[in-house]
Length: 398
Image (cartoon, rainbow, N blue to C red):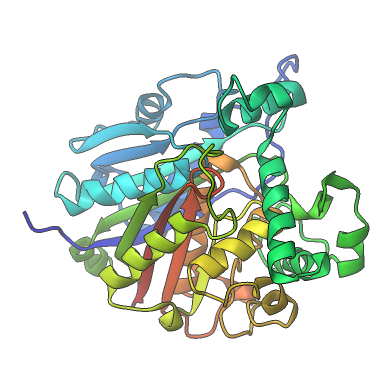
């Protein structure tokens, strides 16, 4: 069976922030009323009627969302009968990326001519205890790791310590990534944090898990995003610029987020393998890219995945950010949205926001943060500590 070419033809996203209301409040902000306008806006951007949608792939809502079977609930709310399929997708940090992947698959294999990849993430009003307990139970073996209070930020902090030791990198170089991302976020209408940061402010911020401080780890936040994907034939018929999905690559190490088998903890093997597959399938190399948008919850993660994907040499990601090489106007801008650190990290839709940023860049909708002549880009997302990686190569089409 031959696969059809798939394009991204529309998108919309809310500003990231704090929308969720505490349970006791008399008036509640509810998820479907936040997500539905994004569907309307995305369809308008695509120039397609909602009746053209054949399939929905929803990034499963966080556990704090009371409404279950949310995908079918949304189909009912939007009055969207579907002939191609409907599903809810879960994959930890990769949830949004997998929702996009499944929408692309539905179009590629012919189940749908037009499909939505969408999601809404509410978590800001959840109690810190509940949020941290869920995070700790996801990290590793609940009988061995969780009882010691081991959290995702703790494993990233250990990555940072090892990386700085192996490559002789001072913390200030990693902190420069946070400064760069905040400069990008200041130009992004949907960014959660836009106030400029200095390197001195990043280094002086209160520690979260040494050596990572407040501005080097992701915020909690809420948001919603919808992407419209379609066959390339449908995309051409709209008469509007679109983004072609050139390829994808995936790799899972066969390990949980923290594994008892010793490995190179700073190599991010899954990102290396998945990006190699994606480059080969697209017939390109990392040197051909004009920009990259990465799932990177912490400064160290952006450094490690950048290096694993051959975007910068190993051990040099922090210096590349500080020197402007990976900033807007540099050789290869990375995280032009502001990334997880400043655009925001509503985790179950972060993978969708990654693709949304590249759709805006490749259709030249990015305003002041537009990468000049952007034509080819890479997106990444992960399952946890990059034990698995999903990479997409995207191309601008007029």
